[in-house]
Amino acid sequence: MNFELTEDQRAFQQTARDFAEQEMAPQAADWDADKTFPEDVLRRGAALGFAGIYVSDDVGGSGLKRLDAALIFEELSAGCTSTAAYISIHNMAAWMIDRFGGDTVRQKFLPGLCSMDLFASYCLTEPGSGSDAAALRTRAVRDGDHYVLNGTKAFISGGGRSDVYVTMVRTGDDGSGGVTCLAVEAGTPGLSFGAQERKLGWNSQPTSMVIFEDCRVPVANRVGDEGEGFKIAMMGLDGGRINIGACSIGGARACLTAARSYVQDRRQFGRAIADFQATQFKLADMATELEAARLMIRQAAAKLDAGDPEATMYCAMGKRFATDAGFEICNQALQLHGGYGYLQDYPVERYLRDTRVHQILEGTNEIMRVIIARRLLSEPSTL
Image 1 (cartoon, rainbow, N blue to C red):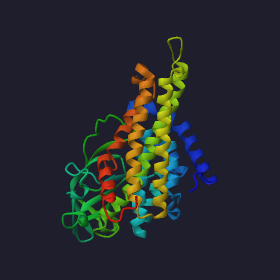
Image 2: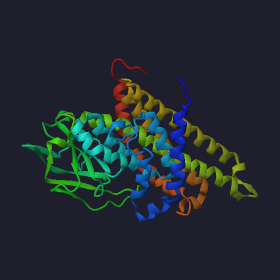
Image 3: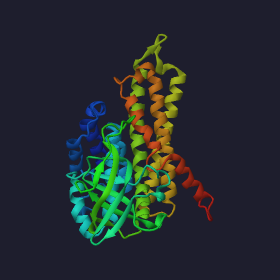
Image 4: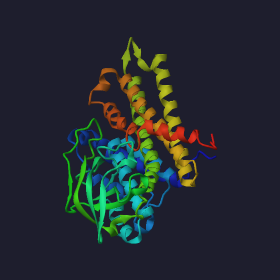
């Protein structure tokens, strides 16, 4: 058990930190206020390898591990949580194509995705199937060399802007075994989008419904075999949960740093509020929760990298703990700022808004508890 990072890990961790501090943090407030999707900055991040972190290098990916990705997303999220979260989703979609796609579909999409000449979205959730993902109703009917898609996906990051929509559709019977994965290209006839959603946070990425109306998608764009879609989706979500947990840690770390600085400068009753034990205890608890979350996420990532049979449970544990702790740390940082924390002149309210949704997406934290409890009550349990 070695908690030290390798020299290579420290190097790309620093690269991500520099990029976040120089390219993301100075513009994050404007992106949030103006609802700007920062395409040029995203592409500069892709040039550093952030768009295909664990995609194979033969198609332009970085070929790194899930633990490496967790280090990178913590750093990026400290700069702009909303934008880092989109990069996480883009990576998840690219990995699905790389891991399960044949050579034709890999070569067609992945070079562009790894450079972010193409942007990707992941389409699983529907208006009628959120936590019950296996109940999805979007149907794809085979018609010669094409599938004809009809249905609607909801809450899709990148909706209306992405170039590739990695989409879970029903090609067979009800249940998880009837789901297939297709890569749908922007501009395909029958593909349209709902209005942009008005959101609490995550304003630097577009979000909309994705609508399929007799949308014809080539069979050659299938990712994996028919009936493998649900397995692909769940395996993708294991990594997605690590990434979004790391994004919560990055946002929380930024808030802890801001709070520590603020309480040392802010004076009440004749002294800095950092001198009060109540403030010190709060900071101590925030730092402890942050470090515990970081350790859980990195352990889950290491288990996923190692192919541990319990990796799914550990990913659920890490996601549940890190996203709950991350939001609470942001909330406590806002409290330490008092009324100033509620103002947009200070960044903590934006981090709070951006991290709140992490407790919902990639599987709600209630579903994380279901996954954990189901494994605990199975035989044999390893805990």
